[in-house]
Image 1 (cartoon, rainbow, N blue to C red):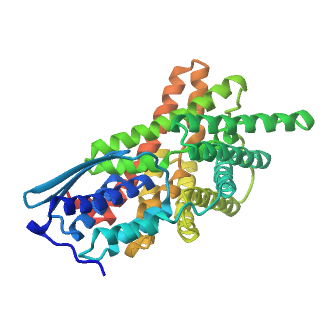
Image 2 (image 1 turned 45 degrees about the vertical axis):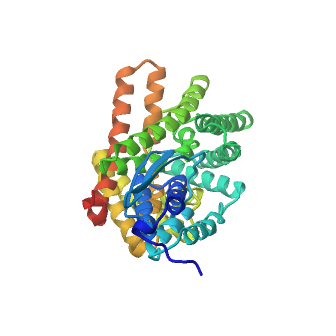
Image 3 (image 1 turned 45 degrees about the horizontal axis):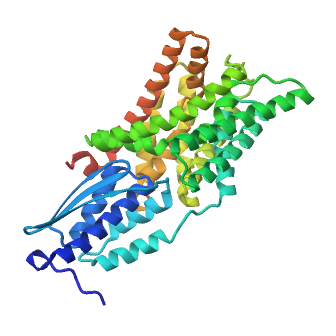
Length: 422
């Protein structure tokens, strides 16, 4: 049986080092799984208290943690850099469950034993499964963007191949910017190539932006952007700004590939005429597309099936958002309302520590990204129509900001500790 941790002056430098290392390891695992920095700090302070560390201070960025543990007059400061990180919703949930149920007191050996057990659970899905999830998520996007049936099928194939490339490069620890650019190039090239091949042997098809842009939306860095916004709302700018910059950089990497191919193959960005159907048929189609899109994203983030299904149902708030926009409400207003409701539903779904809220929020909100509008702005830039391009970019920014602000408002309303703690 492990001895209980001693406190105060009984801790020597070696023992303080052992405890500090256990605290830092927990922080690195949480950071490497993609959770927000405020949650990393909360986890580190929880284990520090359980280990008998009197004071613990930490600074967390996207890839680094600096932590100081103090007992009496003795202190130890450690700096650690994260070599590799990837989104892992299952690990986020396991680590959060450990944080919530951690016994006190606890020993460093017990902490390491639990972390070893959590680390033993790798990815839940192989590369072929994640490629299917990416294809399904993008196909759902394509339906919401008004793509034709044949375009939706081609989007699935394009995103499937793009995700295979992304996972292969990621497992080889290739540069993140280059990985996204390569995956986007494969996805868009496949989409254009397959539609061109279909056109050469059958009726011609215009390459419309609704399907083209949907083929790369599996590359959206949702966790980085949303956790960055939440960190900045907590005034943690050292973490939040870096996360948002990281997410923006990856978005630019995908946009470069999308833009480059659009120069070679002109795209049709004119709005398509609405297909005549009943209101309930339209709602049913949009509901299924939203659910499948969110479910695909959640599984792509390595969510357990029950968590992914919960995120899928929460993501149905996208349907009334679309209907409000179609009936004249500004897109940013409808998006703010939808994301506020989404955040409230995610908090309810995660009640009692069942799952971390962030693992439900991120996939459920990604189907609200205005991808086609962003691409129209890029096309306008190609045509040197800077007025239209600027207007499009501002509209995209307003919608994205509305998403983030809505989630932050929901966090204020549902998480007292997050809203009031310093």
